[in-house]
Image 1 (cartoon, helix red, strand yellow):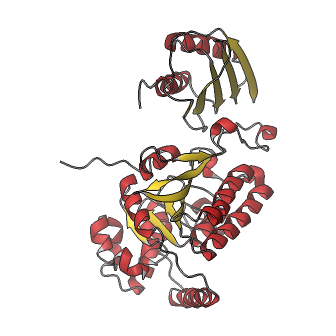
Image 2 (cartoon, each protein chain N blue to C red):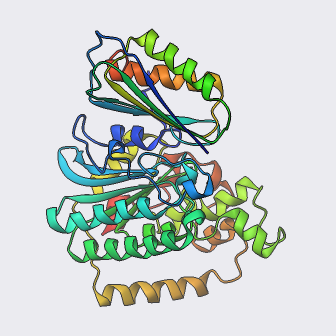
Image 3 (cartoon, rainbow over the protein chains, first blue to last red):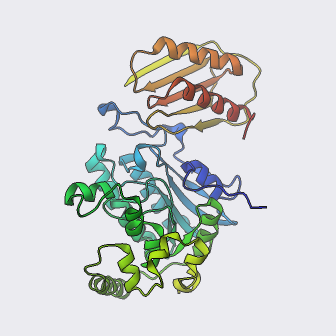
Length: 298
Length: 105
């Protein structure tokens, strides 16, 4: 008999929280009953949400204390407005005081909520600054990406500022989304309707092969929980030396993959055997291409 | 956007399983429904924000029928509606009541 699976991709933010956290352990900060709704949307005639599209709070993962934020991708594409952003920033700043085993960000977002452009942009900077402050204090920050909206725009930078990223194959991570690239650069550059292309260039497998994601898991809330638990209290150093080394690594990478037009070409240069088969590989066969997440994390 | 408020006579007898529940997501064709326990001398306070104009009488009847079917009283029912169809509204309301009364997890 197959064990029951609960799709992470299909779940709402609150369902993801219920599956991630130990039963009954979630205590929400600024809950929907407080009605901290967007001050900007009513002026535009757009409906608000009682939680402004993100639930934040504290709970336990396998008995260990965490602070957690879950973006609701169904509300305005998970986009970050003023209140939404302030909730995430406040959660991160709280981590400096309570020092949990980790701060977990369940990201499902197109980036800044354009209806609140300036406030959303400022929020993005505040969140990123707070992530770095939390990491500097030695608390692990872990991002999870596997929802319908992927993780785009400013929040993709936030994700890459975290200690770890856990993704499913369904997840996507990129600065600009497919439609944006097509609009700006033309369909010859990027066909946003070509779903396979989108996943080959932005999807979970590509990000894992490039080392940007630290674990690739099946589309299952339990699998996300296991992977996240494995990264708790395992901060990466955030020293000047570590940042300089990362900068040098990225510069070398840019050179190494210059001229690649597709993920497949990148995988080929990485030395992946039969790179064209990568999109068809099951999770286990795919992960066998790589050192285990635990090894890779060292 | 249209903002509607109804004060409706409630029913006695339901012991809520929780102080509040929130179901649904505000998206196109979807809505969120929050039910909170409130001391309202047995009455029900309903607040609806909807992107669709001109359906106040329909909303009132839908909510009256909902409160009667689930025999709710002393509750605040708050709705943010992104233009949900009647079937979705009915399902979400029933889902919220089921969670509020502990009928369904």
